[in-house]
Length: 429
Image (cartoon, rainbow, N blue to C red):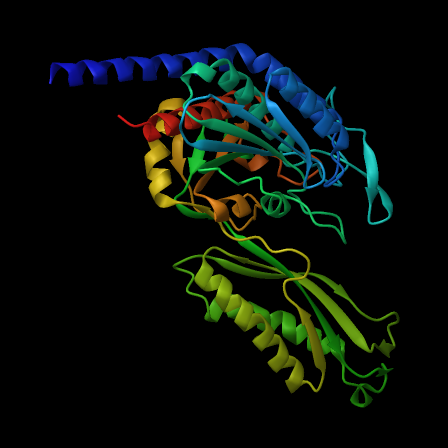
């Protein structure tokens, strides 16, 4: 009995020593993490075009002595830290791509970059926080490499391209990384997303679905053209399209059990016709479906075409439906048993009063493809200054997007502690 007590005391002492080491090094590395973030922010690159970003990360990871592979899913970078001791393989992921957005912020490191998108020259900005994600993972890689002797197993650092979606006609992102074998041998995966409207120091979590599945779709409604003065000679695809848009909304309001999870159908683009006095031959609609559980997802796959086809037929028109259009993400799903297992790590790292259970959101994340392969957790980390009202926080994907850089230190600690604690829990007594 005395030996068992001494062993428990030794394990606890080691556990607290590791936690103190992570906290100490995260404090010491904060200025460097901020420097990395500012570099990425100043020089953003679009999806599948993260060439200089990847080269910068590759050089850094090789400098840590890690086994580095590049060119995964076109521009992805993956590094492996092997402790040399038996244990699980923990994957940590950060996304790398920026967005075709012109930055309006008055920052000394604001983006002035441009690139080509859809054949047009566009401004580029890290308007969603991927610059912070890369910097936080680089900080965690530094700490975990220094603490190699405390590890039992392997750590795979995944720097992923094209989270925002590959350019038209291309494939990219997490789905391609999985196809190319990135998750082979991995036991668990952790990822973080900075949140511009969440207080610095706060980590948000949820068991089960935390972000929605997403399915873009396209509908081409074909009617019969006529002069606008004689609509009875037409089969009007414009009026039919209006009926379809309104009818689709009844799926979520009348067919989905919203108590179990939200569902969204949004039409974001309508194209048809050239003149005020000509009823066109066809109208094109492009939209998106968001669901938070598999049952709702399957229902929408049935209901959207059913609703469209029935409405279009009632108007004497025809419809061509493409669902999904060009990509499809599963639900970002935090496996409940894993969430319960790692919740103490969140509470110890951030402080119990700074760990908040949140509702799911209908935004989507291709981190879900990694979670389809192994159990994983996706968490939100606060990036809003404490003195800023939430109502004034700049939104993601906007020209005004900003974060308080002091929030990144918590992310570095979380990635490091989640790795260490998972390995410790998996270690045989």
